[in-house]
Length: 184
Image (cartoon, one colour):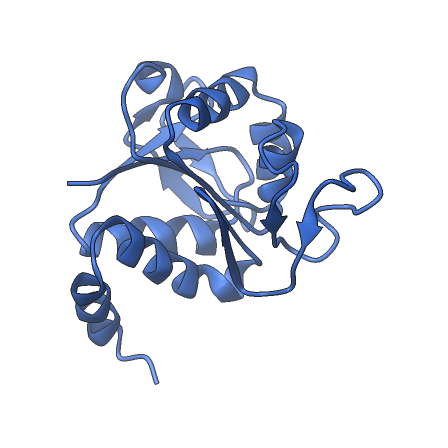
């Protein structure tokens, strides 16, 4: 069974976080949510309370097939300012694991240096071409370049989750999850 780590920071985008957690779990993927703070509960960007499975410190040495970063502000800034998140990004990249980020969170991947020479997408303006000229920016809803996945924002969260499901499981599982959502 594939395993995914989703770090949750104060001020994260709740629609992205919850959509990704929910759909991946529907697909039978092992999802571990980990709070950056000293307690498992946190408040998302629109004042929705979330409770993580554990604290980030408790899973720093664990193995995951993917780390998935939800966006939102100031959640993305908290992720980007956390040395543990950057260390995990670099370790997982070195191990050949998947890295994924949505909305403003691709900025964290860019700051960690893993988007250099890659195609990526993000929330409009989150990745500044002047600051990161080595990144080829796209306006596609979901972009995958090697083992790095990025997506645009809350409106693309469901497509992003379904893409990840197919990547980590198979097309049949993706279709089963999507069918249950009654999407047009």
